[in-house]
View 1 (cartoon, rainbow, N blue to C red):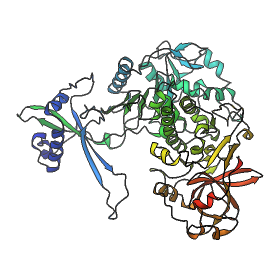
View 2: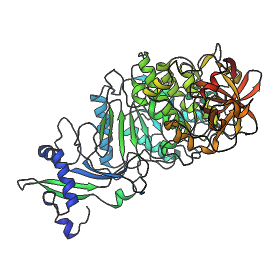
View 3: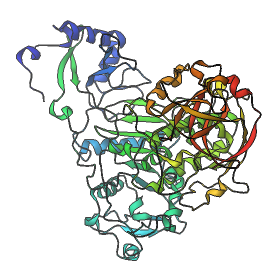
Length: 634
């Protein structure tokens, strides 16, 4: 309990002496009926079976508006005081956050969430599914018995999956040398990394027999083994959409930065523990004391280090239900929405057309028999922002570039259709080709540059050929109508990989790059790089994301006649943003894809080119003077 000075002890909600606190309290009272406040204080929340404590827990937050800093240098701010944080129901009954996830209070909360989801939600888990190739068998539920690696051979059942950070090195894992021992003698519990031990403990607490953990259930490569020579790894990694998608629940060990840290005994750090909640007595208008109002520090919904790992993005999105052990508190997400330990809830909204419009998880959860244009367009609008997130996450192995996102691609393909070509969709190839280096809020300033991948070969037109954060344009319905209508398109995709079926992991699959030649018909124009100040951009939406990468921007002028051929200021016919640094003394070529944008290319031989960047058109008339021709993009 917090210790209060004599003045603070005398403060009551009914007669606050601080004008600011009085203003905040009356704002809450004015918003919520007294009966509603009393109901919460008495622990009676209409329509809910809640295990929350009987206090409304007020939280104050500071938020910077997402807008440029004004000339005086002072940021606008907003302070919110409320009970819980419900996006649906106004006043939400708050909960006290447990000091650490393994305490009785936290265990009770996680069991309640899972039970309620199974019994009340349409997404309820519990039905038998095809088990993964291997699972860890925890039966009987006895702490004294070593878990056993179990080959399922098509057996059905219920299992939990784990999403976690490996860290620099996972010492205890399955390889060809210990595979037989794990199956016959079991897995020595004491040798497991702490995060794996914690996941097994949670699985047992929830009464589930099987758990799937990648380090134990997929045969891992050993030092000296070829990165693409591990057949079991290559095969199992393409089943992530099933392994996470069919799991009864996925445990997100968000607070653990590596597999040795664990997540159950991790105390919530920072000021939340250093400064306890402060109670204020609540007295009704008639003088009756009804309870206490607690003022306490805000607890974030940040998952933790797990959000920085590339592999865990698809593990999150593909899982129908998540039990989150986050940085400050636990949470639970399912197809109906989410709930957090502090009492915050958010029920998923339908858009009135029978499709979720909230996140890739919701769209992927829709009945995959829906194959009309609405489902396809909506999935694509989520695909490109998801790529931006993915390329900003970390991977320790460059060969995992497409592997770690293959599960999402497989599931998205059921709605998008067409072929998946090295990270791009054949049915949306023009938009897909316009990826570029760029800046998003939260990125370093200036943004990290792109680098071409040396570990393996990928076609230059694919974002998978680069390492670093990419930017994708045209992710809203309005932008699609404005920029990607047929009247705006200036190039036609002819073919790629004739006779080639979908391959969601061509890097590890060892597919020949000769199969990935894009044949395109469009206007191709020779240009030179011009030294000098970059021409100002007229498109406000692109100006900021381009200018953050100013070190890779360059003016382009006609190759054959120089400035005399152009009607644009300074003779510039386009402004380019290169993927990586280029030699400004060499000649390049512009392939316009839509009216205002296209690809900057380097000529290889005859009709073969490779991508080196993108460009914005400054002189449309100059580009319209030539007839289209067919090229091959490597």
